[in-house]
Length: 229
Image (tube, rainbow, N blue to C red; front, top):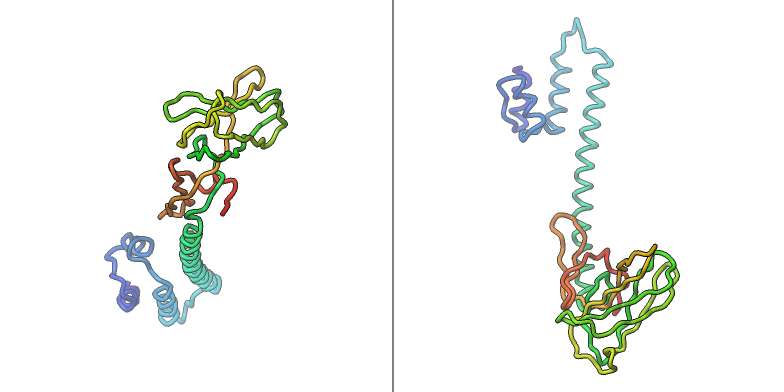
């Protein structure tokens, strides 16, 4: 025990008073580093009984433990470096997205009704008919687009900014509800709509980027279908 105490003292690790506390020091907050481990191994060799020297297999096992410790330390350093690089990459990616136009999975869009809006719906299987109902901020449906039969995949639609009466609707935020009938059941469909990225939220825990879209709230980067200019 005195040999271990001397080595731990030289390695700036406090000496535990019991065997259990020694184990705790090696696995807890008072970690036994690779330098202290190597010093223990060398000290053990220096103080072995010449009449009963250390068994070769035990010595090889200890060397293997040291090699594993060295590998884990190197791996930790590498992972820390990758995490730092990933954070830098996220920051660079975020700065390039601000102000860009994107097509994101959402049912709302801020629409300049003087221009046409292009959107996409996701059709899971071939259907006889699909519709897109456009609702204003007051919850009133102002236009229903009949898309007809559609094959499985993405189907595009265009809204010219007019209501069912043919009048140009005021600019603002609108909700687009796409639906169809599958196996006699009315089914909502996923919509992809254009938006502008106002800002980007970078996760502090390694999560994905969150895009803050103008008038639409936040969506994850994985929900974005297309990034424009």
